[in-house]
Amino acid sequence: MKLALFDDHRLGVVTGEGLVDVTDALPWPHDPDPLTAGWWRRLCRDFSAVRDELERAAGKGPALDPERVALLAPVLNPSKIVASASNYAEHVAEMHGVQERTLGQVESWMMNFDVFLKAPSSISGPRDPIVLPDAVVAAGQEIHHEAELVVVIGSGGKDIPESEALDRVLGYTLGLDITVRSAADRSRRKSYDTFSPLGPWVVTADEIGDPSGLDIGLSVNGEPRQAVHTSTMITKVPAIVAYASSMMRLLPGDVLFTGAPPGVGPIERGDRLDCTIGGIGTMVLRVR
Image (cartoon, helix red, strand yellow):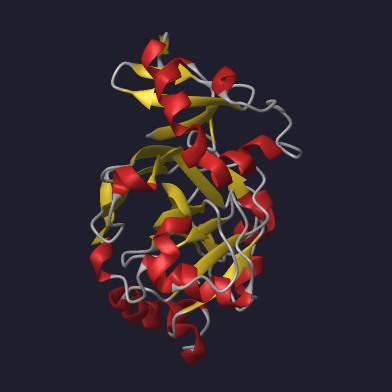
């Protein structure tokens, strides 16, 4: 099932016919305020209990044209964004050159897999522009795209065994981890507003199956930049979930970026980014 948020944070299911509003099929009140929308976190936690009713509602229609609604980021006010670093070997290799160019040296500790936090306020939608900060642009610092598979947590938990990790996932979406290349802390460089575009919707875990079987691609102004298969991750999704939960409780609706594939590069004002994950969908983003 493909779950979308649109217009006044309504819940939609994407079908072959279009987007069907299933908000009224939820067995609890819908609060359109994204800062207090506990209904979304409850959906993430209890999706299996309401799935059948949502499917019935989606089958009744009417279907809306997804191009004629305001498609929003398919998550609401997560307690945290957990992001993975150095999770593709070819990206680790290319970062030596990137750091030599942007930092004047290679930070060896940054070449090892780990996780860090991004500000949830950096989330933007699949049709929102990526806004480059004036001060960063004026300083001449590079700002890079990183197209990634993103996990949306379902029931979550603490110290989740790797063998149970995928059962705690609601689904998957496409995300960009926009990054300033500088000597600052990762969380600072990656937490500007609009630096975490997500979309176009969440595809539930049962529909995706094995998340290590997906193709990721990104082009800038028609030039291919990133193309990778998620099977080449160093640390696979179950291990990322288990590792992150060993340090912090993963709550329903939390967001996990799984790491940048190779091919990262600078973006500039006026650029057009076309990003796709097979089986999930596509975002077209403008940079301003």
